[in-house]
Image 1 (spheres, rainbow, N blue to C red):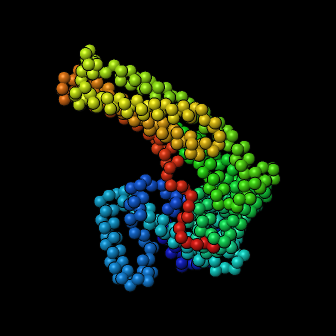
Image 2: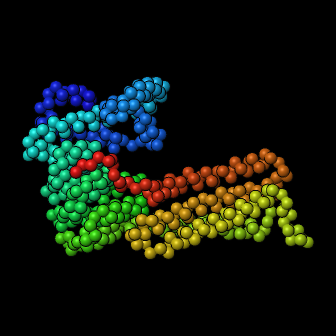
Length: 438
């Protein structure tokens, strides 16, 4: 009930300065903010199209905008109301966005009240909220606190960890990305050591907390987890100073040594899963190659004893068979070679970043294509030999051929999609907004 809370705080402003601070309460409820809500593509599209209650569109210097935007906003609200009455899901998303707007507005109001106190009192109220919001992963609260009280970004806990140390150690990318909005102190914050002389690159080299590792539910869990760990290490490495790569901590270890040692078990798990998957798939690909090669030699309907040409060479179905058989043979051979390259890989840590996932993606895609073309070649063979130009037989064959293809998609597509998304989709790292915090 953030609207009621905001009304109470506006009536009694001293409530915002109590101990514990009401600002801390927001750090235990991540779902109260946009960053804590998981939506699919269509839900995100609906969410972004719903007007926010606390948006102020009149703060533009363009006169025409001051004239037309209020009218457009009224129409926008009317359309959204009408759609919400028809579709319950739109109404629920609208309620969620209203909750988010109220929570953000309340955080802004609390920060504006706390910042009016003397520096030491404001700092003590902000410190706990900032640390909790970082550990939970609520960038809206962290961004507003830093924007209201910029000196708080230098705050460190008892282990000399700043919020960016904590974000890296706990793999909170939405908090870490705020570093892009800090111009002056970026390198100082990332290079400063903790009590164990670890800089941020050392912390990126340590294994992520188990809950964060276990968040990716997939058949290729170890491989995807190791890939994400490598992405974190490379990202921090790219933004830190070159000399930070060779700095030793109190255990006389560089960041690279820390990463190798911490991820040794994860590399073994990833290697074992990769080899098991490649072995299984290479058997299937080899069987398909063998069958298709035999089918290419013994063509359906036999060959003419005088000319040596296939008896059905003039029929369209035979041409489809020949093309499908050739494509299936080429794609299954490619798949077999990709899986063979996985088996003969050296399995170094960096191979799990791009090389091995890329080979697995190519292998699975070409294996899928070979199954499709193999079904097409088999269907046309049956039609040529037994069909007698009967259409219903062709329709039945097409329906039956879709069964193994659909089964392959159902069983393997989630794995393939996770691999493609993790390897080729936009990075999770980058600037959150154009707002400069420092």
